[in-house]
Length: 85
Image (tube, rainbow, N blue to C red; front, side, top):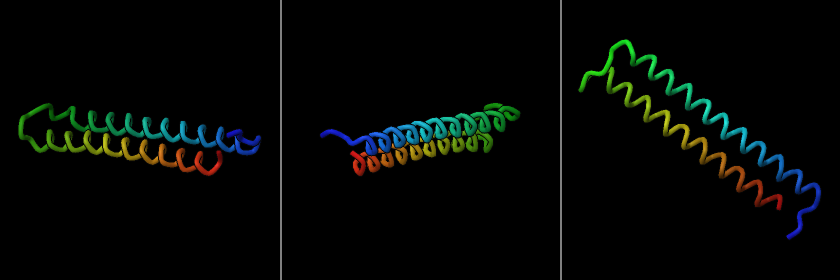
């Protein structure tokens, strides 16, 4: 299938938006991890400690949020490309 110039431009824009969304997701992830580490550092590591549990929960939540944002970006790109190509 040969894309028309307008559709090629739309596809290129969709890819740029997709890359921006991935970059934003990674940036938010890095901030969440840094925040969790900063909040955890004063208490140190104590097995079974509430601070340790909070740290683990924060790290897990950061991973889940990043994965969800990345999945949404891929779905958005796929849907846009399906409509434009």
